[in-house]
Image 1 (tube, rainbow over the protein chains, first blue to last red):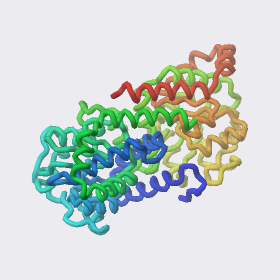
Image 2 (tube, chains in turn cyan, yellow):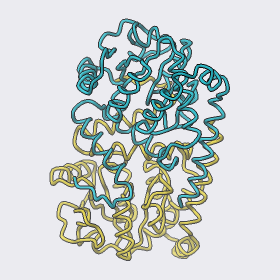
Image 3 (cartoon, each protein chain N blue to C red):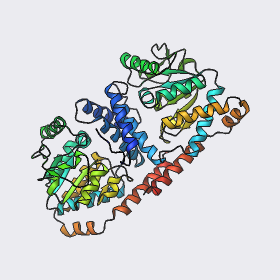
Length: 247
Length: 247
């Protein structure tokens, strides 16, 4: 369908069309489209921009990724659909490995997602083989790769659900989330929740990765002085303001 | 897929599964799933309940529907998917006619939606024939039925987009919206925006329709004393509070 460029929500509507295409190709689950819509609403309350608190969280996430012994970035259908190239580029910058891990798991979808990432230049993608289990989850979302999430010390989970975020935290891993809902269990369970839209957050984290590469002391300072709870409060205050300023 | 009943978002997840089924059947457009997600986020900020301001708006909407000479209720894929029976019941209570009107318009989808409503007991459904045009819209969303929206004086538009809401208002019709986003152009363009989840809002409006049936003076008073702008401010204040109370 044609969307007029003057439409106030042009960019958002174009992303919607792209994701609905990807759902037809089986990259995205239909419920992934609904989850995307939830994010859209919170992004609207952020003014569809990276707010200062989100930039600070992105910087701390970059510090954790560089301090990690075994950093892993998980990729689900929505993350791949919205930001596959950005995630591959971030993984190369750290370096970290990518593990495909989806909510509505079928061998076909896993294979399609791995191929999708490989076609875009992704290397050593994990997820086809899931030979480890995360404790504390009932569904088959507990399954993961022993080479990847299973043995990772730091995990970046873009657009992840609350069950897995909590299980990863309970497993003693440092959990870095990208999630637009500051009230979500994922954002609260995370050590660092980057409350920003994924296509803005991922390149921003990568930028900070390059800035912090030679700066181990800065990284420790950023990590030690960060409070996820305080950061989420700042985000919520921003959203409240925009509820009234937008009208 | 199995969803555990203990999941904190069980009801929301079940609705997601239902809507994704309906999208596979072609009742919902994929982008309709995204739009639903946006609503979910705002409903979350309402505490997934009918707040007092929304109940007041529902009462005023009921008054308008009873005062109308030619009331019409428009039905799109999301409205049908979530609340077909409720909308049919409300239409009978007023009485008003239902007109199917969708964003992603194909003859097949229109027919499927009309059949869907008729299978659930809907009568005299309008929308198969669209022989009138609304001014001020470029897309084929301008098309409507001369018997329905074309000649209606009061139009209830559940989950409608901003372009049509504005065009209906510009055409001099009394616009009653059901929309969870208090910042949306639809909510702002409407004479009365009921900021509530459709499956709560529609039966609530019907309840008020029965309460106000014999009360013309009460209806006039409710209509004359209502300010949509003030009502939306109350809603926004509620959402702000919940941003901080939920954490």
